[in-house]
Length: 240
Image (tube, rainbow, N blue to C red):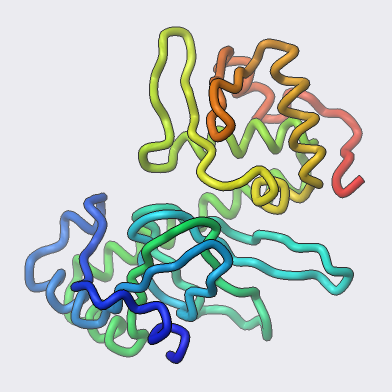
């Protein structure tokens, strides 16, 4: 709790304007916010909580392997419920901010009471946990079977689904990359230079363009989808 006191910004807590949170009844919102503390985070800060809702920015579960390698086990974006309570592992990592973020930390015991008393809050938690489980299942497939090119294409489509990350353009779509490339590499299990090489190769093949450092233009969405679904089965160079 000391960490929360350090970063608590003193503002009244609020919920993100996304489903399912914007569909809760007024009494449910009131009771849920009574269990909440709004905290502000900068890059690298530990959220210091195992339960909460991302209001803005991006958070991740970070682990360091015994040989010093850093991995990002899970990503959370604006509107996501973060629930790290139900784990049997002695150490699953730290919940950190990847950029300036706002996090609505929830008191675990009071949140449990809220979900038991309000069916819509319980449903919201179930929906969010189900969505996150589906993302993690897809990500596990990427790590286990896909080459770096395929994993990069897959994560671009994942980012495309983040709130405010996609803007349509004639013949393609521009995706905002919400985290640094080094974090992308740690998320898909490769070195940063592997991500850079893959981006340059896809540019040469005219599958993508880079209008800005933090943007990727999907010039050929069907081809990129095939790639994301395993369309380039080459020998993996993970951590090479």
